[in-house]
Length: 172
Ligand SMILES: [Ca+2]
Image 1 (cartoon, rainbow, N blue to C red):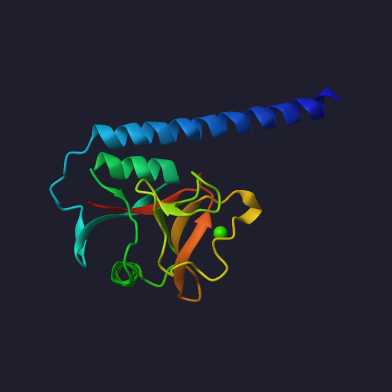
Image 2: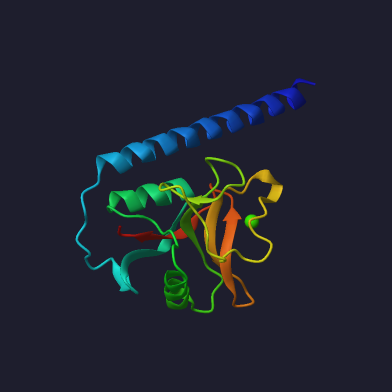
């Protein structure tokens, strides 16, 4: 009898802790953002693609929060697609026939079903969602990835924030 209830309580505790942890992460990230606004000289790790400089993580996968923090430590932000030209430049640059996933700045963590570019809160206005997305699968998808599918098409997809993905940072 206890076994069943104890397991349930444990799961609930873990959920509460995870939720609190992510809340802390967001607050911490907001602090990091205001604390390190020094511009970074575009160096070897940043590539000029189109008109901007980007860091593209191609090896180490991180959850959305850690990816955001990593970009901030470089004086950059997770990528926010503001123009069709930028979307085309990046997606053409990255395409290599694989089914890769990269975190972007898109999220609806602040207000469910309202996807914005974090932290500017600019709405995602481009028609770059993959067909059928964002679908908030199981009510748990709140961070937006740039995703290549096997059909060789690419689009934005809302996904689990704690999943580990590659990611793209852009210099402001
Ligand atoms: Ca989705």
